[in-house]
Image (cartoon, rainbow, N blue to C red; front, side, top):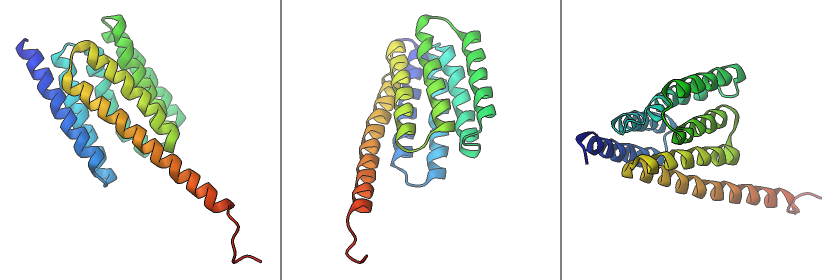
Length: 180
């Protein structure tokens, strides 16, 4: 293993640690800071593995997190960011496997700008799956584990949200003995 690959593995594990800390945190602002930190580590990891499309698109993920949080539902900004993602992918494209980070960026951008709740988590799960495939291709252990953790966390959250929705629906349909 080369020094660059060892550094890539190190940054992948650092990203994993930030992801775990972020998803374990109940404060949304702290979660965003930790996710931004994780994406800096991911960008460094991708650069060490010379996965340039993934590295560049990951830097755009940081911008997307900030913009989507502030401008949720803003179609023109989302379309601009998608266009920038396409141009960056075109400029850095090396092989067919670069489709994985591009798909992840598209799923993540559309999801964060347009969706909430279960649909958001499904689309972000698709993005995480694409990132995981890219990490498997480049051989990043920490990156693969981080995306697997995101997939599992997303799945658990979807189940919890569905149960809450079902409970709310059942409670709203139940006869109320106080009403006459």
